[in-house]
Length: 171
Image (cartoon, rainbow, N blue to C red; front, side, top):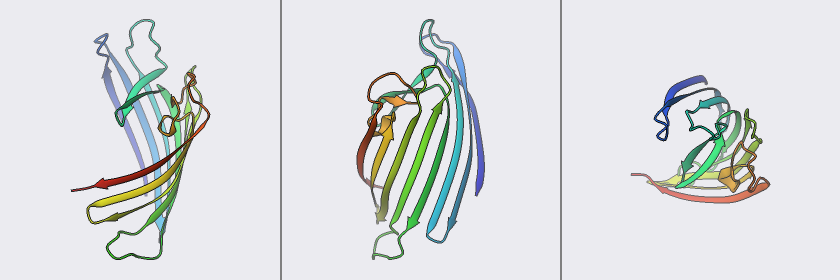
């Protein structure tokens, strides 16, 4: 499967009440051959925000998991993933899938600093429950313990690690 996507939007700045804009596009490829899956993606994005005078325009604030972080306002990202569905079955469980995913963000701003993240783990489901455990290692990457994405603003820019264990109930 091959795909492409594009988006563009106006972004209202609630401080200035002026509109900036953003655009992004991505190219993606996904292929499954038996128990093995491969996915590749390239993304390019650019936010031109209508920031107040004297406020930096090379970054924007995002939030996930109830926590804000800064990311470069213009960057390219690359993602590669491989997965393998284990050949044995356990009664009542969905197939166990193990995966390895690598991503990098290459900022195109003055305060930019490359961010990388490598995730290795396995997942499976049982009835309405979905379980996964993965090891997340990053460098200058917010999700694994860094200070942001694609920015060299200080904070923890060394390699960081997080063990992620999640259990979801889907109904």
